[in-house]
Length: 212
Image 1: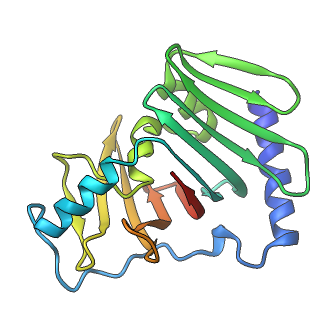
Image 2 (image 1 turned 60 degrees about the vertical axis):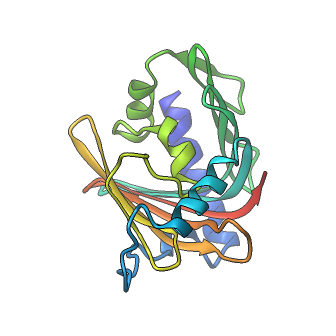
Image 3 (image 1 turned 30 degrees about the vertical axis):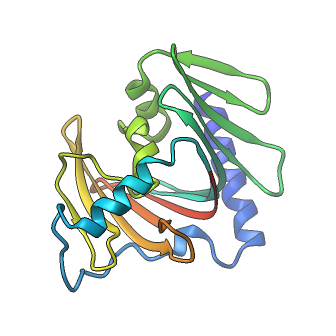
């Protein structure tokens, strides 16, 4: 399965390099420092949070990019979220039939590819570490992708009452989340570009379409 994952990464990166001049790999990684940091008890921010919490089931589509000292790849993605134990993340290429799907259920995580191979792992952290080389909190990502932080976490809110950045510890590593850009043509504003870094690896997520 790991070999098929590498093949998908390579084919997806090749396809995107041919068809897109705006690959997510070229997206910026730094968020502008807020002119004013809004306190967490700010009424407008709390109202924004309540609107995010009301989005229980949703779909997001866009581009996913991965950068490390050893490799770089990008892929289209389709994220379908229903409940904390029922969601799926599919990576695919627009010039190839290859795809890779991560599907969460009550038993754990199932990873499957377009060639019919699949595997279910109860230890989700171990599976994510095998896939991307480090533990990644995909359960929490379901909230992060909406721009919704941990309720008691340390985070920064910008002057537009949007989540700007936060740090999250995972098994001795610190993931730094930066919300670079938002879709501001909708209420609530939802993220358009998110960058996650842990010191050696960078994940870039560009959301082109939201549905809920």
